[in-house]
Length: 375
Ligand code: SAH
Image (cartoon, rainbow, N blue to C red):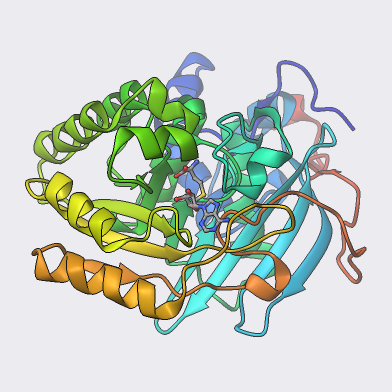
């Protein structure tokens, strides 16, 4: 089922957009907040049941909005409690969403694109090539589905754009989604609870600062340009000095005290030497940041291996000795290929028991009274 051209996808619009649109329709914009609350806070998609909105406003919405949800192709749960869903979008593309529960928090790892165009050599998503940008509706529907339908018993506290895709290559949709996550009428997340992770698109970092108030994570993975370009071809366009200058502008420009999260995947005998650690510390010396060391998650024919634990520990100790805050990320969900860089959209096992398997659903039920009779 294809979305109806011209219809507004219900999940993708910020409160501000509803305010403007309602005013254009001759309705009071005060109903925008109620609408956002119904959809995102209460998980209500049926206009018929949105009792907080006057019927004449719902009649206007009824004719012009739609809500096609992704279908669930597969769901899996890892030994450590990490859950992964394979979602098929209305157009057929398959994306992945991963929920990572931990003590006192639950993080949802979202996809922003179907596939990815950046070709980082150690990332599995890169192998599937680039499909397309997701719409804001498709990005938000990942959180909406998990929060209100798939896992309502585990409230999502954090959202990270660390699934498939490069979020800053799809900035308009990512910003719309992030602003909804932050909206106190929708998901009420704080700026530290929404993290956008980038491979280093410098103009995107500058724009992100202007369009959303969120945390920034940067995938650095190497202390010098020669090695970084080898691992991440995007570095040829935006080398490390330019990237770190953009990071500095990002933290300086905000009203709050922020830190950039520097991600660094440890690859055996590639970027994990003591010299690399020292060179990294030197580069980061004047940047308010903390380093997140990521153990490499292997996948078939990656050509890389994970650094041994002793090397990872040494690397972290050197950073700490040099005054850089560094933590090691525990790999989560690696037995179901849900860990960083393992998301490939491959389909291995049909999912059972979900109400809407393999079928996008148009959620709007007809209003029982004819729209004309409602005003
Ligand atoms: N495009 C964004 C989001 C990518 S995924 C970015 O580049 O930041 C989130 C993190 O996982 C990135 O830091 C990415 O470099 C890292 N990653 C990719 N493949 C990995 C792998 N096989 N093992 C561990 N981390 C990986």
